[in-house]
Length: 309
Image (cartoon, rainbow, N blue to C red; front, side, top):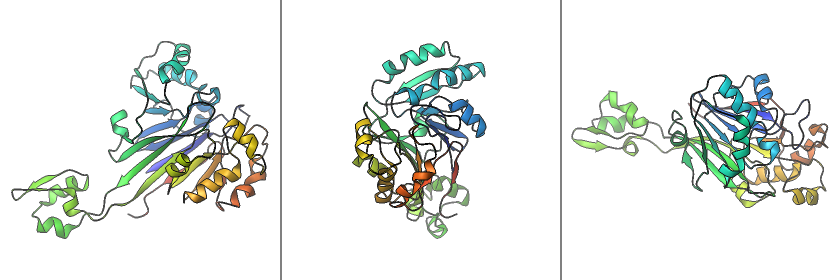
């Protein structure tokens, strides 16, 4: 139900094998792009991800290595005759921060909507029509040198339909589907609600993208029980915690420790300093805390599915 692709895992400077920060999540034919660093378009092309038709670009902050891919992407959307509106979300001050970017992109053939998300989660379909109503997006505060935020995307799942309850309440078979999708129906002169015929909610899906941040309680809480957590891990060596703190970043070990405490299922490290030539050299520093930690790389993909049919 969630198809997630890491498009860029570099920090500050793009490298031949590493584009700057970006990741894409697709669900039911719709896509959110998280950050849009330099090289996002070419990385997406290599990974066979269509970023021209994205519904929403969710920016974690306004440092160049997270937004400098935007002018080119907006121009490409225009050249491909896009007419569908595009939503760009980000921290406070988005209109002023992105004004130079939008000017660089030039005239566009589609509406551009710049939004600051509320502290509570929002239905993605309220931002971009067509998303499943069960899909929700949450922006949570992080700790960096500038205002910053990470994102969580969840897909809730209702309980199983209990046929015996539907039959007992006199619900016609052709109305069972409506109840399963959250609608109320009328049967035998009474209103039947979904909770009247559904079992306990089942585990849904959760994806979390950290953006740039130092360790903080809000990140750990947002990541809790995530199916996949893409977390910044700028510095590989143990002992670089002070350097990381000075720049509002984390080490491999710090990222993995948060993932372990948050009980995430899968962890991908990303946002590597250009000083790191081979992230795999430092992976054991992360695996000391989270044994299944993975070094993210451009094009890495995960297909997340519900636990049960």
